[in-house]
Length: 178
Figure 1 (tube, helix red, strand yellow):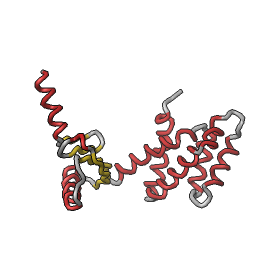
Figure 2 (cartoon, rainbow, N blue to C red):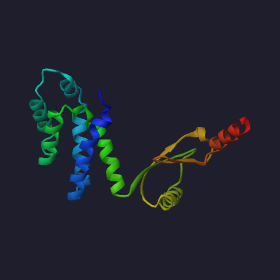
Figure 3 (tube, rainbow, N blue to C red):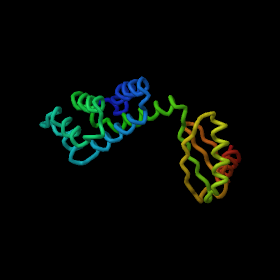
């Protein structure tokens, strides 16, 4: 069977194109998250895997559960996913859509891990520096990890900037072992 991400990709691209055309990125994010949450409910997840459950019936149950959350296009997406046996790929669809949305909005998710809690002024300065370095809007999530000893580690997609003492010690260790 194909990877779930492969199954979800064409749906994510199609939804992204719809959102781009109508500039409704946030609305689609909300609808996709609701669909993914609904199909993750144990009873619905079990029904998705059950061979005797009608796909049209399953789609209607999900649409009824999400009444007021889904617009007409969102309902059509649920029906299409059910008809093509792709409801189980909803979480991957959300992930791929959000990546496409972030690229279109020139946003990037950044994770900054520091050795100790950071003051608000330092957070603002570091946020500005990262925004300037990446030349994009950033959504920063902050974490603390005492094993870094001191400093910080910044992750933005494939880019990792490790300015921690533990990272420097690892680099020194690798250099000595060569």
